Image (cartoon, rainbow, N blue to C red):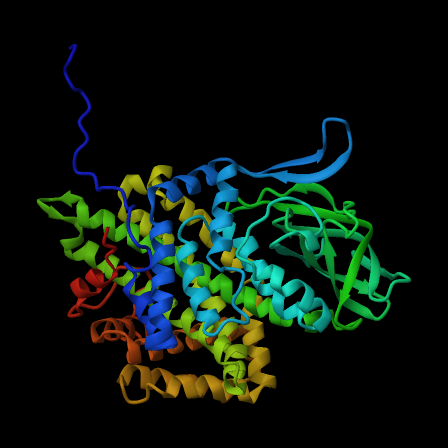
Length: 541
């Protein structure tokens, strides 16, 4: 009938927007305060809250939706047939990337407390549109490799740390800020597909070959691993040469990969492409070791951010939707799931920020701690992220499948963090390698864990069981994943026992460190303070 409403929407939560993504995350706020101390933490809180309000704004959330809905497009030639090898991105992508650069997400290495501040900001920004975090992460992670050549670092590092985003392709010397990508993935998964021929100019080489996977192909330069006469060597390949001409950087195609739809992943070719050597010939893998470690930490941080956003959306939905005469969040079974998810998110945040703090300290013990803790954390946090995202989507029921809810984007964005920069077996083997070759790293991790000795009997028992496993490393490779998992869990439990509220640490130890633990989320033992755990993780708009 005319004038009669036939579609009335009821019992739907309000949008989760117009809020401070940082300030609403109590676990993250407390971690920043813990690692920076009163004075620096106050200044950082102001910066991070400003970024949090930006991340939580309706405008930025709309940009994220647009960037996800309009994937990048490859243009190999212009209208006249000239080879240009460019990738077009939606304007929303550039706006988001510019916000990330201006927030300092590419500059941490020379700033007091810079890694903790940047890690918190990266965790916040990962909750907006994870695809734009790729080029931000790679630029940040490039610094350790460039420092293998002090002259190169002095020239390029200020550009990487700039807070100005310049999307135009022109010589780096004429840009206020640059982005740096990587090209280290071989077509056959081995070595030998890119060769480097020395040129007359000192430190200059010509590269020829192909890279199977090149993320963010519109970056200003790339770190590339190639076979020089002296062995695998790291090179810096600029997109535009000093005279303004385009370097030979042939984009063969964009790869169709799972995960973020907003970022581009190209197959790139080199044909007598000009490159500058970074470090000595034959030392490429050693030069890139620090870059790989920084990238792995960012994968853990990105996963912690995705977890937090998934949990925040699930709790927000269940807090505002009613079923069976009451709020979903108040129903025992649903509350068990939400509390369990909140525990996983807080544990990931606590461990990731602790690793960032170790970068800021830069003492020998902290460096040793990172060598073992980073692969264990990367292994565990990134694997748990996908499970958290899927379970959080289930909390929304049928709405969890709708793109408008934001959960499908989080579900798609979760698996790549586990795949990039070394998949699960690579991380587990790295844990074993460090255990066998680096006693100082194990000592540093055990010292960190030991700071919680006596605080929880379940944690103490888990540590004793870990000692038993570590006593016999012969034939341990089949158990490498289990060892990496237990080490990460015990590190998380140690941090939560010392720093989180008792209801959080008690529930974590009861559900993660006992034989009676459930295989899925929502299997917390009875008698825990689940309501308080959910309240702590509830985002306030």
